[in-house]
Amino acid sequence: MAFSQLLIAGLALAQRFEDSRVVKTVTKEVPTYVTVRVPTAKSEPDRDASVVARPPLSPTYLAPTLPAPTPVATPKIADPRTERLVTEARKARVAGDMGLAIMKLEEALNQSPEEVNVHYELGLVHEQMGVFDTASAHFEKVFQLGASVAGSLYELAAGKLRDGFTEPDNHGKLSLGRVRIFKDPDTTDGQRVILTIPVNKAPGEEIVSDDLGVSVYFFNRSSNGEIVQLEKEYESWAKDQWVSLPFDWASDGETVRMTYTIPPQDLQTEHLYGERTYYGQIVTLEYQGQILDLQAWPPGLAARMPQSPTANPMLPEFQDSLPEFDPNLPLLPPLPYK
Image (cartoon, rainbow, N blue to C red; front, side, top):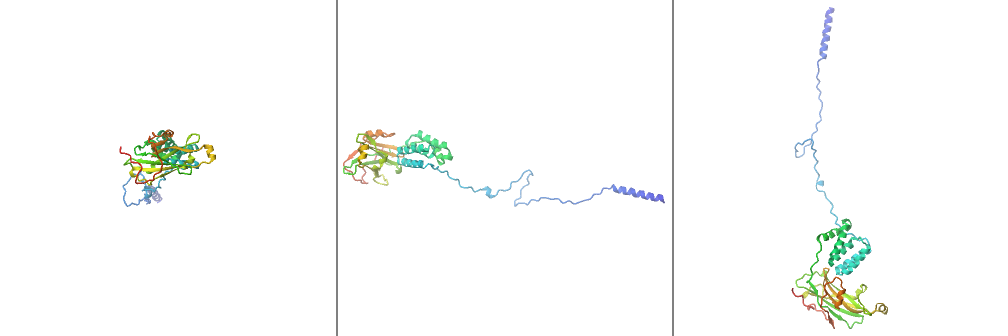
């Protein structure tokens, strides 16, 4: 009996040991997270994972609105006196008085040696006079100052240096007719001399009126016999008037009348400067900055005109009376065809 119980207990222990060696598999569901891309309207092909797609650019980036470029302006002249001198020089250059223009600009250059407007204007004056070496030097100075200083003048000067200089060929287009001199014997207000100066145009030539100029340089004789040119401060003694405006070049000619009046002198002025009497004049015809013709009376005065062409040997005609002008009857015939 006891033996049977021991046997049953051993079998039970052996069965429990075997059960402990059996491997139990337990299945457990673990949730996984999957990233799902939202499909676009147009399906895209699969791409390699190493390629990162750029987001599409918005219209703002594709066509940005840029502000309009600011135009390069001509630099202003800082010194008021220099500005006034440059303005006066420009007026003189347009009027064909290159001597006065250079005088004003040299004074401005002494006042403001680095002023770009002065150098550029000096370049223009010397270019019109045909002194191309001096003109090139002034344009080179503007170019060296750079765009930040010269502004719009930088590009203009660069163009002058790049393209070079060409002198317009205006010879044969215009000429002076015979100058007529009338000394008014009836004037009671000092002395009065009236010049009639015809300007002839070659047939078929087109003339820009604004580029045409007639200059008269009067000379006086003092009581001690000295011949002196009319001073700048007395330029108001000379008055010019074109007979017909605007120009129509009827019969290819126009006429300018120049009235020169020497007012009575007081005793003090006469004692200091001597008595002044009319002696003669130099008449020049300019077109586009070129002196095309020159007449001097007396002829020896032509030597006093620097950088001038050969004086026209045509002598003036002295008149006893001043004729009336008839626009339909020109004073001189037109230039002959060449």
